[in-house]
Amino acid sequence: MIKTSTAPSPAFAPVKTQRAFEVICEQIRGELAAGTLKTGDKLPAERDLATQFQVSRSALREALRSLEVAGIIRNVKGARGGAFIQSAEPDRIVQAMQDYVHLGSVTLEELTEARIALQDVIVRLACVRATEQDLQDLEAIAEKTKRVTGVEERYQCAVEYYEVLARATKNRIFGIFVDSLSAILHQFVQGPEYETLQETLIQSRLQLVKHLRARDADAAAEEMRKHLGRLHRHVRKNIKGPLAGG
Image 1 (cartoon, rainbow, N blue to C red):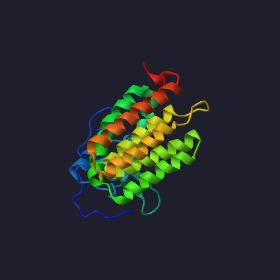
Image 2 (cartoon, rainbow, N blue to C red):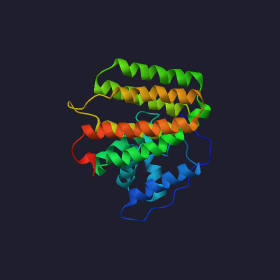
Image 3 (tube, helix red, strand yellow):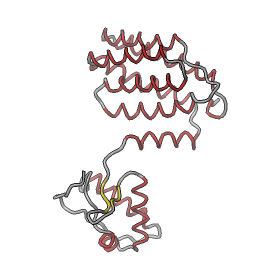
Image 4 (cartoon, rainbow, N blue to C red):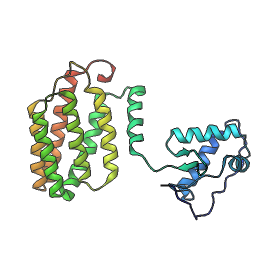
């Protein structure tokens, strides 16, 4: 929703550099960090911004395009349009992680190491904070996984399972991290020759819920660690190419 801000207007400094658009972006991000600009705020008109920054309209537009691609602003057309500060979009973080995989060739070993460290924290918090509804949802997803047979269907069940587990921590940041790592995992489990999960992996998810119900953090963390180790070996057996790592 577009809103009119009553906060003090950001004070931008003139830009004197060949890469003016980068400095413009830095200044606008700085105003966001300082709280002068907030979600829904409208930036001054292009002409006024160009005057404040003392740059050409083309340099300013290049900066605004860069900020739009980064998800910082959105451009609205029409009489009441303009450049508005965008709300945070976790999906952009997930996409950035996927792009990093494509560009940087993250290995399966790196992914497993990161997931084990992250899930240890998540499981321990879930042992304390999970509600009965969270536990029921986890059980339902694990049971659903048994009934589907396709690789993509089981992958989607895994995504749901880890999303609910992260939700059980009552900390939304963990959900963003989990979604990002799940997006990376998806790069490893695609292809017509990939085998579906073994039953032992599915049963491990149900066993984890039992430990969560008992509020046994050590047992739950150990079950998750063993589960991710088995998953690592399962994926390792199926994948080929540069993503397999050394």
